[in-house]
Image (cartoon, rainbow, N blue to C red; front, top):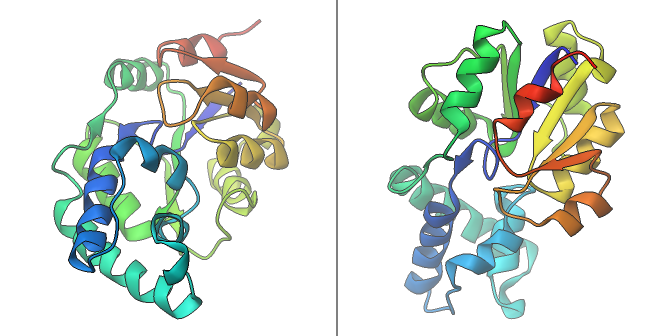
Length: 217
């Protein structure tokens, strides 16, 4: 394997608390029921609009209503996104080791592209990512493989020579559809059963295990 593509939320950075608090603020202001932070593990993963739709009560899930609440969520999250969000333990050391080995790195997220780029710049400034792609960058959202394949094209590396690391079924389906090695991150938002069922080639418990996947067999 010659390169690594990472999902962002739940894989490189733990953003769950800020996402949950932002959406709960939107719900509270609208006098709607809020959710425990743990519930957002199931709400996130395939774009902010889907997060909002899942968080809203069934009575507020019309297309117009979801659109309005999505706009509100974007506004709130843009202000408070970095209160608790930080790289997971072991991520800095893993990225440094891969960079020392001259392994090309990339990020592919369903978070809106401007916010994806902002998070990478702010929280992962010490490492060079050859490609950073978020939603609304001209490619269909994951699990559609278009973004992953475009990332491979920009890296100039064949998809079957790339490790794709993510924490959700969306990520595993993306990697499989793109012909990449699907690696499930158990420190993220979902569990081993979901990752395996979605096509993970391997699941790992610690970021440092990624380094071993790049070593020749």
